Length: 170
Image 1 (cartoon, helix red, strand yellow):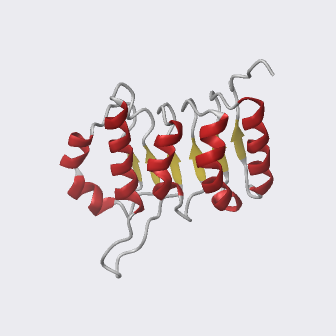
Image 2 (cartoon, helix red, strand yellow):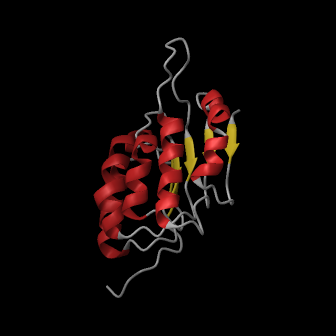
C-alpha cells in the first residue's frame, strides 16, 4: 500500500483497534499517510488516543530485522484540532527521518503549540522537507517568527503554504 487515506472520517480508538493487524502489516509499505480530519467531533481524550495509536503504528520499528523500516515521506494532518497535546502524541511519527512533506493546514495551531512542540521536531527534519503546509492556523506574529527560523533550515523546500493564516491585532 503506497498511499493510505483514512481522511475525513472520525476514527475513535475502538475502530482503529479493529484494524490493528492490517495496519501493522502494511505500516512499513506506506509512503503517503493521509490522516486529515480524523479526530473532528471526538471528545478530546478520544481524539488524542486515536492520534497516539496512529503515531505508534506508523513510527514503530519492525521487530523482524529483515523487514524494512518506515517509508513514510508524506503526512497530511490537516483539519485536526491538534493543539500542544495532539502534537505531543504525534511526536514519534513526526520524528521519522524519511519525512519530506508535512501538512498542518487548519489544525488550530497557536504560536505556543507550534513553537513549544512542533518547532523542535520540525527543525530536526527541516533539511529534508520539500513541502510544508501551515495555512489557516493562528500562529500570529510570534509564531511567524518561529516559522521564519524554520524556513531558513528548509534547504530543499519546494512548496510552502501559509495561506489564510489569521493575523492577530499586532
